[in-house]
Image 1 (cartoon, rainbow, N blue to C red):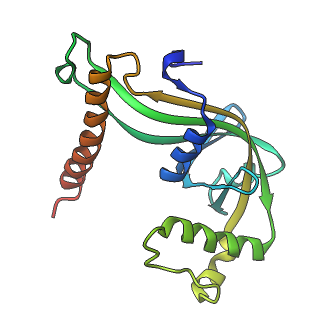
Image 2 (image 1 turned 135 degrees about the horizontal axis):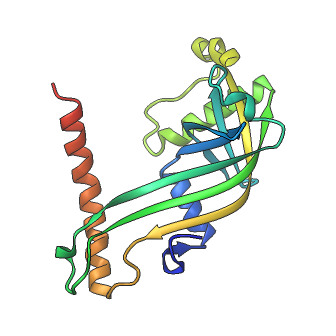
Image 3 (image 1 turned 90 degrees about the horizontal axis):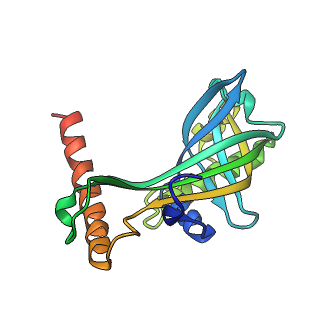
Length: 199
């Protein structure tokens, strides 16, 4: 298991918080020794601890998301470069990040009513807390697209938290790294969007 033990987080509640806050997952399946990778939101269902997702029928990974096939899932939290200049002690440059790695088995749910309700429930979750948009059950566009979406659920088998957050540093340096992660995450998003989406 890597990174080292000091950067491992075994608290499942922390993992769940990452999943809830950063639900866009990297979903990995393997077919004929080749990885198939899709990025899509997965919602953690509190009642049974499963992940719920939807995938386009034309996605080549769709056929693998059934029959108890094995999958690997990665959720990514905030991350940034940490300059030695922020520390009160002598250090080397590093990178801090939060990742959750899961493995599980996937099952296809063919029930159209369940698919429809799941899409409504996911939208409600993602719209929180403002709930500016409500996906209504009688939305004609929703009904029209049900034939092109597959519902699946993932039974989680293993959990791994990789929280590299300067845990091995002095309390002051650890707090400096925390503040740098917050600032860098905000600044880098704005700088990236300004550069890529120029008017």
